[in-house]
Length: 473
Image (cartoon, rainbow, N blue to C red):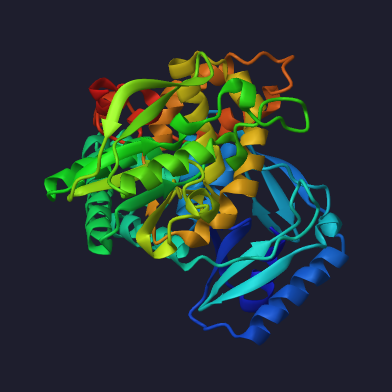
């Protein structure tokens, strides 16, 4: 909010916050003027001036029609569209120094508490806004990963060609019975991306392909689809899931709370994993394990593998980008792929769709039908999952040779159909009730989409059920 007001004061321009990026907020200043280092410093100084004034942020309850007309007058059509979709007769806006806006987060009473921040200039009129992390209170240093950035901006260009930047654009397609064709277009883009990925894998001429990413990124389905594409190109892919190398329950490392730690690399039987991998590369026969999560131990089901000339090993798991996992194999003999759903759609120009929220929705919907976990159980463990990702996955994203965006523009509409009943089941006395209400408020920005429009081999089926790959297994 402060950055929006400061940009208006200094450059008389609008700002957009389309994505989160490496613990920061990707920010675009919408002006024909090419901003310099001095301009960015002036913007930072104006933000500091506003913060030092401790200007009040006033909460206003406004008639829906008044808010709608206000945004139309400013030509902020996507915001007007969002207001129009609200079923209540009033909406909440926040006012700072004469500027009105709404945000999908709690707001302070005044801006004086926001004094710690930083702006990083990416070039052109692009910035990264960083602020203190909730867990440490420290401002993280921004680390630029060009492959991730390009994956996000390439997707932005494509949805721009379709004229779908914001939730309101998608909702209009749904309301006009156009969502079935739109889903097909989105799926074609995903299929083309996986086809190109298969070509990259073959061009790399590597035997070891490592596919990693955070929880609920669609690693399993993407790996299975990649395998099919490689088969059509004359290769014989062999799938290895890193989860099958979990240590047996009685050998699992224990965290600081005395509970088994499933998130760290220490949870993997590295000795067995590397022994199997080295034997395969040496041309030996290997009996691959399968982990029984019910019993908490590895089993052997006579899956005996010996590499042939056109065989290629696809290894999928949380830690696949971590060089420590396969440190005995030279780096130039491995090809690494990073997957994550970098959500391309924004609620509006000032409220991005959180990739973390999308992954959480994917996770607790899948946990409900696949593992019979109540949503509270997933919400309870999510903080630990996120902590594990921050510690064990994100520091290794720079290792990736290729980045694949596994998000779908339309997916939150589908997830709403499954997620709403689960979130409504959380009682008011639950410690996760407020989080459930926040997620419900987020979901209700999207019109629901029937799941029958989602193909059986879609990555999204990994989370809502009915996947071709689950049936194939």
